[in-house]
Length: 175
View 1 (cartoon, rainbow, N blue to C red):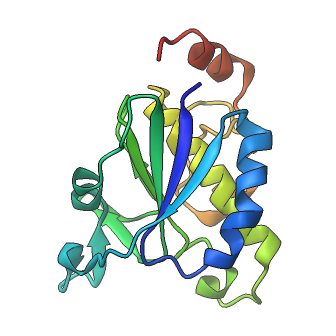
View 2 (spheres, one colour):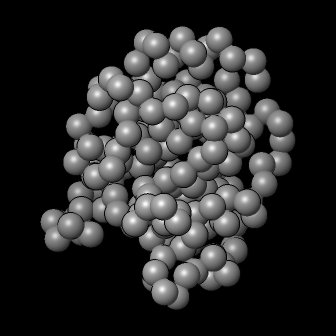
């Protein structure tokens, strides 16, 4: 499997990255690296929606090598034109994905902060978006990490790993 590079851009949870990386490595089996960038996402802010355009951000961040995939971590509220919001986004077979903690935090829903729940949600969403980078579509198995998540409850219910069918599909692909 390709390596996974984490790039943090306007990410409020830098202290969690060192805790997230071992979970990602354990659950996915890929090597995980972290690169902090000092880049503002203000150019991607939509005043009318008061959110950031995930598609435009993905188009601007390039993956440095053909052997790696990049997942951008941010804490800004993301959208794409056809959805009110997204937890993350990746193009099928692409090299770069984005995951936002904005709607993954309990505080967004008026609940007490829960660091472990936030880590679990970020890990699930990262593995899910990585699956899209490996050409996986949404899975009908709601235990699979590739199951669609339209709400944080959907994300909490699904598993953290690929089902056997999705894992077989990933393992059969050339890199």
